[in-house]
Image 1 (cartoon, rainbow, N blue to C red):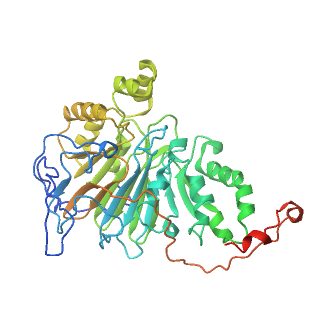
Image 2 (image 1 turned 135 degrees about the horizontal axis):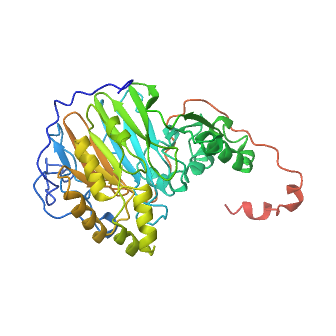
Image 3 (image 1 turned 180 degrees about the vertical axis):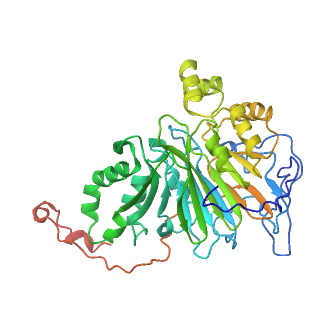
Length: 422
């Protein structure tokens, strides 16, 4: 593919249908986290909301890791290695948000000198999951949108308007996204409209907050072209068109240090993605809707409406299996699925009829460690109520208290008599 390196995949060494075995305690005199194994397991783990602790797969490890991984990923306790990719699903769900599933978002951490962070889409609730990963707020400033549906973009307003107040403090949010068939349907119009809608928030924040952090810088590209849209710090990002709802949706390919990650965004099964995966893929996360009957039963949609939603804009389990069979990634992931134990079993049954490679049904906070030696899938063990971590500031800014409106002087309650209590 022009502009993208073709990684050498000769080192790939998939293992059979293995899974995390029962928890194995390993100690070195001081104690360690339970370790992962690749012993075969025939049943799928329970979702985390139902008490599960493992990634939903029968093959959590592909290849031979060069180091031992704890059974669960514990934020703050595993440094990202040089030359490694860590891909975390921040939102695995749907247009409707539940406590178990935020809407669509995928975080990519790069093991380069800069330790770059990229986020693909920002659906409702995804930033709450980001906050639980103990990652610096200040580095979350590169957003790649696959398309402009609300369930892929709603937390962008939070990243721009709210995160500037808790540490994302020294530069605009950079947003990349596709054009539309007319200007009003493109990413530039969308982002500029959000900035306009945030006018009151921005005005009320001037002075205490660096004004640069209140801005968004947008890069819009032609949705129809397979092309490099970002190239810096040894990272190459390529967009390609996908088929979803209306013209103007894309997927992305990340290439770094001989490793490749591809994310479909929302799409029907299509050739542009297959072609974008040429040269080999370490991890492919592809959307997969439940069978229409299962979707209707789980959500209350009519079977007719569920069938249209699946066939007109999304990918069925057999169709996802066909894509995986054509691409043959080292590890495949499914996303954008309503997770119930019954639905998960149906999806795997239909997918396994056409594809037998390693597949993970992602849920919120499924973590993939991608190295030359292996791809490892786990769940993150997180703290729900974690204060933001600002991170290292790259630009100095001295907060300034703006003068208050004149009418506040008469409207404020006098507090001299109670302030001495504190």
